Length: 288
Image (tube, rainbow, N blue to C red; front, side, top):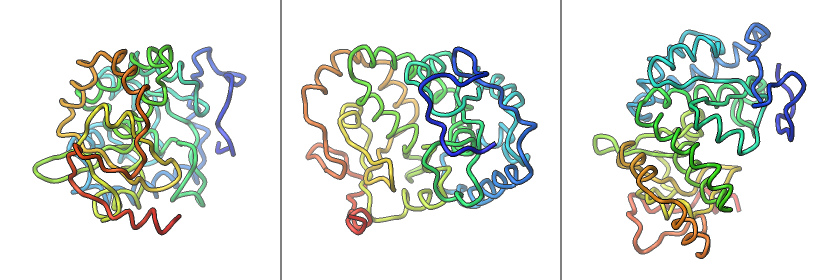
């Protein structure tokens, strides 16, 4: 089922108007299921003691350890009972308005293709392992599930207000690459970290990146990189605090304020930051 590109500008033949497609689970090959199992086994060894309690609880509740690429219908049935979310297959990256509409209606869009066996460590586009293993366990947590629905509802408003880049940074630094404080330690919950063996270690143990206390305005002004390990990780005190920051904020005046200010460079530390770890930036400097 794997293809070389999954970035499209219109629904492909056979897709519904909302871009959803059948997962076509029965078409996965033994090799593709084996790729999932290899990736799963690698992460299962790394995540205990590193991943958040909510993530690990969701991983167990959804029975993602059963083996092979999950069947979205069966997965959605379990997820619906927990938080009312479901997983729907899409052919690749979908337009922003489509993405937001699905999320606002508790439908998580997931690619139905899986990386090749020679792409275990990196794939440019999110595949079924990133989307399902990385994201879906967090959707079993009621508070985080509410946060993602609220994010989806705010998405089209951000489009109308010309603030998509700023809202996208919030998604990046929380849903994709977020850290949380638990029992006096840092834990990972962002999908881009929990689905990556290398970044699962780097995000918590490397002296290179900054680890900064979460602040909504600060996050939405901060650039990020998409091609390598992060130079900043933002740390939420709890998922309740993250949800409150989203639902209790009037984003229209916040966008006006942020859009009038310069972006914050990726590795910058500001005087009023709550710095948990001031990174050396050694890793990024060595790649320059």
